Image 1 (cartoon, helix red, strand yellow):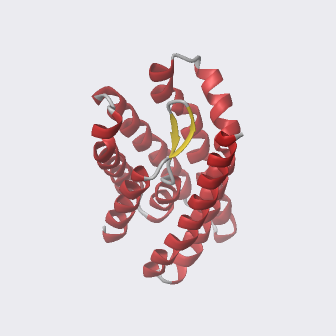
Image 2 (cartoon, rainbow, N blue to C red; image 1 turned 90 degrees about the vertical axis):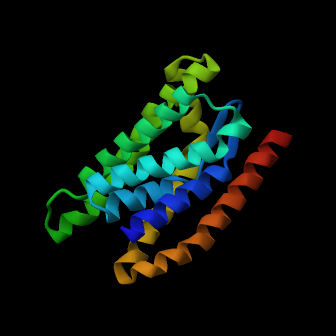
Image 3 (cartoon, helix red, strand yellow; image 1 turned 45 degrees about the vertical axis):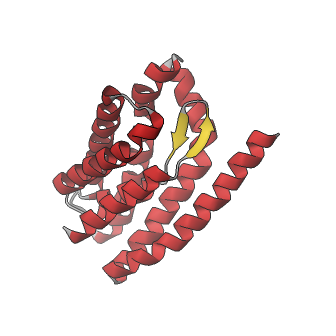
Length: 190
């Protein structure tokens, strides 16, 4: 339970520091805590904690962004569903040799679920067709998302030794964020 609360807190922090990829499109460093919830916490608690993190994160930035209640509900709902699906994959019964495959499979489910459900949130705001949104987000966010899932796998390795050591993951996550923020800003300047 304490782990889930800590990852909810990490999600809320991620919402405070988005990376702006394109007009009305922000990417958060929330894939790391969402992945860790999916693989380290039982599925029902993982989905609940993901929903709580997304809700608290959205509410913490709602006033400054002018987010509508329906947008908040869409974001929370898709996070609950995607994390639940990833958690169900990660927690499938399997022999030790297949466990790693399930953990990578959970990352793939989370990534694909996030990508395929992003038009639910972005299309009403941008007016763009869903397939166009998926293509643009895939091109622009793939590096960030890939880095986050690698950090999540690193966090999983650290957590398998000592759960408290997940706090050490904050430093590489911050470094990836700063690096990608600089890259996005450099791209905007061109």
